Length: 478
Image (cartoon, rainbow, N blue to C red; front, side, top):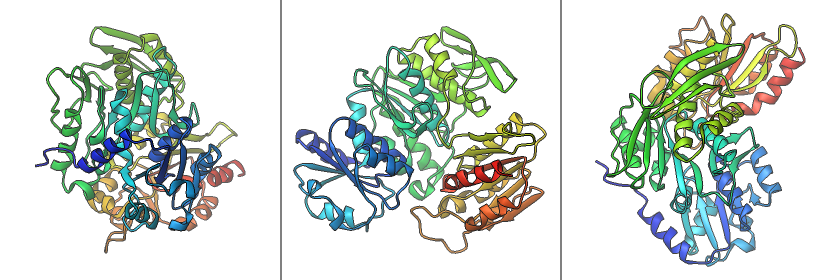
């Protein structure tokens, strides 16, 4: 059994770094959504920031405009001179970067301190009153909701988000006067074991990342270890019915929540109508009536309850909670409605969601069905990772079978090499929808041009979202 975190070396290096006067940072994998908020944070604090990423994107273009010196060629010759002094530059990398990356290897071989992104984020949590939100799904939206409540409250906050908050157009919220930080606590590679929460939220523990953890038991154990990091006097807010066992320090309070009638924090009187959802929130010693989440889909009721509980514990008022949830416009790629069908008579509806686990896929499809009853739902699902496809093929097939039509391209490999016998077909062959088909990604736009949809939903953690501007144009120009 795992006894603790596996980041001792990172912590030693980070302690050394805190004693030095490094004035620059170099981020290897700078264009990742979780790295980009740290790039922005240190740029805003006046540091000299450079970095490498494999491919340019809208996000890397924004980072360059904000002052980051980025390269997209994996060569040590591309490292600017100002980042070549090991006494002045801290190197930060994401585990998604392969070990044979030439730039990362050069830094490691030339005396630089090289730490994971999570270790740097952990430093920030140790110097703030950190609200850390973890879970196999729901964490990005819950984190973004919490940040939106607090940034508009008297308390304020700095937030490091795993998605772009549509209210601000950024994945960083910065308030130098606030003692609060809101952190998306990522379980991949045990990253969340670096954190030091004052308030922790666990939204879900559906097994994922079994390429890292090996099995469900060790995955759940990682969440128990995460809860053991909550500071004395802190609070754990955990969804009802989860499989893991919290392991909190003495003096840490444990509260449960749900979007239904169960838990210390729960709902009453949920109403649907006129494109809105409203409910009453019940918590220990408190009731807030008529909450209206700004993104009115069923899966956000759970997220809103968790965000409200965390924000109230952090000092927000009930009125600030109501306003922060109502004004929330969502995180990009989290149930993002590109076209709502009202642009023209008989208009097609286009929705994108980052759902990449079976339960997320199932919940997203169920939400669309409830939001648009009677309309045909067509889903394009691009599997993300060979290992995830292998480990959850049957569960994905079952979840996708709730759609009326399923279109599936090839697997998006991300950081992985192909696994023999693992293709999209091991999911698609078991989908029970009346209509289903395989379509290579390069042919998707042509297929869409020659098809008519009532609702088209793109799902998955791959790069399917890059096609959305073109899909939108196709729909608008019919």
